[in-house]
View 1 (tube, rainbow, N blue to C red):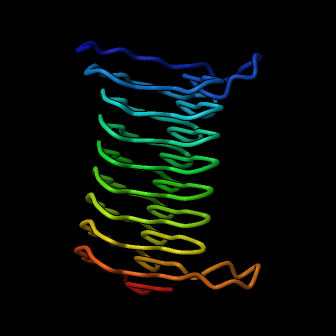
View 2 (cartoon, rainbow, N blue to C red):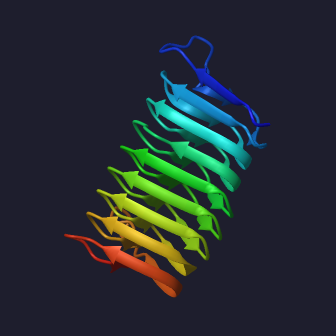
Length: 212
């Protein structure tokens, strides 16, 4: 606790690892220290299972691909995760992402948050500057609390099948739609967008504030 550590990998691997910090099991961050990570090969931090943030300060200084990549889920409850530069996404999960507390700060060329299944948020803070979408779920997204600030060149918050806003405070500046649940054009399916509560400030020069 209270220490600062720095980790960087090389540009080539021969052992099948995917990141500067790579685990085939669950990966958990906790405590009050600071960890600085640079991923020169692929991801900065990756797990074949789940990634849990229960405390600490984890800074991705740069990554060729994702800042944090998980096969089975990312869970942010405490601490601060910061991605200062990444060639792809800040948080990417091949399953779901759940944020109940803590802080995510991201400045990336890909998406700030990308979940293959459900994205849920009930607390915490998400700050994203992105050249793509701010938050994207390929399935559903449900936000009931927390603070979200997004500046992006794509959609602010996008969910393919359903986007439900039940609370939270949002400031979204997006080049496309600020909130989008327009479905899957390839499959010909429509999405649904529901806003029940929350405080929303949205700005888009060429898209819609709410699209669903």
